[in-house]
Length: 174
Image: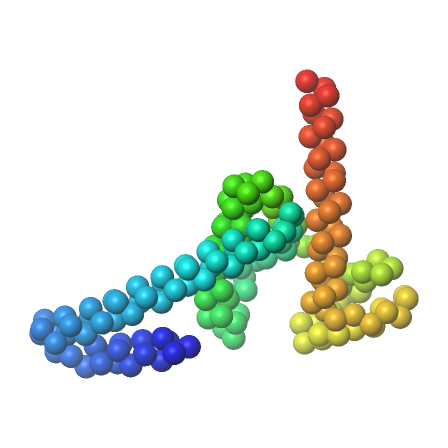
């Protein structure tokens, strides 16, 4: 946030400089250096975050997200681009292979938020504005994000077992 404000100031100063002047060259270098620092900070933070996740967990299950579609929402686009979901997923995948962990992306249309983690009841629709809901079937109260995490972990474990069974059956056939 602080760097963002500083970048705005430096870019404004750069735009006011006369073309091909020495002061414009200096201002352009200041902007470039700040861009490099922001990029390095983001890369470092992502590396530390993904390494921590991989070291602390044996299996990582991630929701398949339509990042391109999410970026089209002008209210969220900047924050989603800053979060670099694609880079996080890429780093998790290669680090999981390095550390011998399981990395498994779930299918994109798995209804993790709309599925009751207690009884399995599936809601017809659940708008993003609804953060908590009660299951009409069993009456359990759910926080949207916690329920989605439980359902993703359950689905990931079942897919992991199924994948391991397929690998065993392929090996026995050979």
